[in-house]
Amino acid sequence: MRRAKTPAGKEALRAAAIAVTPGPCPNGVFADPAAIGIGSVLYDRDRDMPGRVRNVDGQVVELERPTGCAWRVHYRRLRPATEREQRQLTALGRLHRQQQKRLPPGRRRPLLPP
Image 1 (tube, helix red, strand yellow):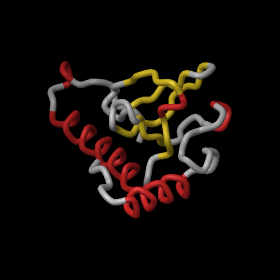
Image 2 (tube, rainbow, N blue to C red; image 1 turned 90 degrees about the vertical axis):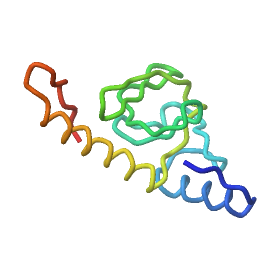
Image 3 (cartoon, rainbow, N blue to C red; image 1 turned 90 degrees about the horizontal axis):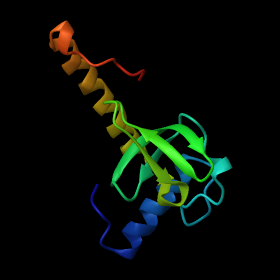
Image 4 (cartoon, one colour; image 1 turned 180 degrees about the vertical axis):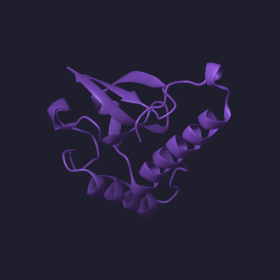
């Protein structure tokens, strides 16, 4: 994702992120890990990519991509994903499923739900 170069662009990005998912503070950071729901799509600012919440363990949130890539991150490094980032994650899952169908059965990875 491209970074906004103007203050107005940053404000628009922040407003879009806040409008997508309720729960974070006005600055886009979650105040409490209890506000993070399982299955919601969040954006990890350390890895610069969105992921779906798989588990919340205290202050650490486990995210997962449709490809099976999973990682753990502190909840303060997350923000709600914008609509564009949610579409990106959905498209990635669709592409991964299509590629897995083309592989021979012995080389396929188990498919994750959409």
